[in-house]
Image 1 (cartoon, one colour):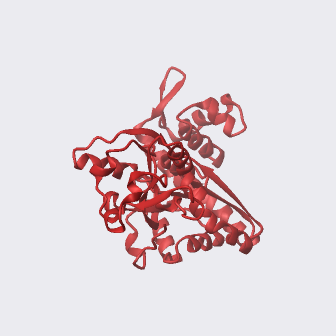
Image 2: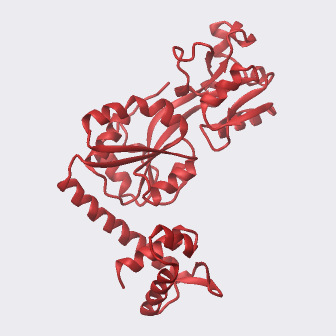
Image 3: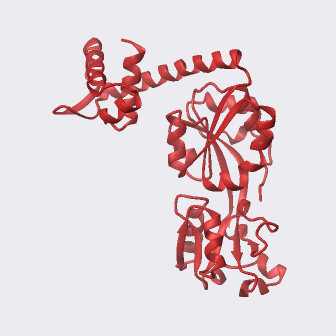
Length: 329
């Protein structure tokens, strides 16, 4: 029994039991992976994988327990490497941030330049995707941090902490009828009024879309959503060609940059949302990662992060924050 066998088994599980894909990622041959797995099972005296002929189809019941133990072992092996890097190359390394387009485009530019000034030898990478894809990147150690609004807190094995709060903003052209509302009327804008117009907003996996759907459904309204997109720039593009009104995250609207639009805050209709930080449970974090997280959320202490990471993936860690959580718009 050795670490190479552990790596082969873990990667086979990660690649949905596809030995060809696992061997490609591991830079070895498929027969080599298959042989190592069989030798491991023979040594252990149990079958880890269920098979149909020569094809692996899933984990046996004892295999589920074995896979969990192997994952813990490999996390600690990776942690040993990170400890070594922390003391041998304290301010050098990489930081991979898995994030949605909204975070990459509108939120992170406020912090990454300053982080680079503090840690010029740390290579920063952004990996974009859907919230569930981001979670998988962190769980499979393809990224250090995930940053998203939807779904992160529901993923097993991911420790999450709130980063900032935000509300939706309605985006219209300057000559749109809704711009004629007084300040008081805009603050009391109703779902019925919005539903009179074609709507452009996020795909269902992104940026609080669930709350938008739930708000209309609670009033028995069926809004005419004519276009769904994964980023606010696309939404604003189609608002600009008068295809409809846009509903976007408030962080994605800047009156100076978006001078061709009028933004109307609609938090009273769709609620307040929390963008969360996702970290792999049990992972060792380099000091510069803690510094970056503190930049994102000043309320976030190192103790709070460590408590979250060591909580076996429990996401209920909001109590570790000093209230109130910062609101970003």
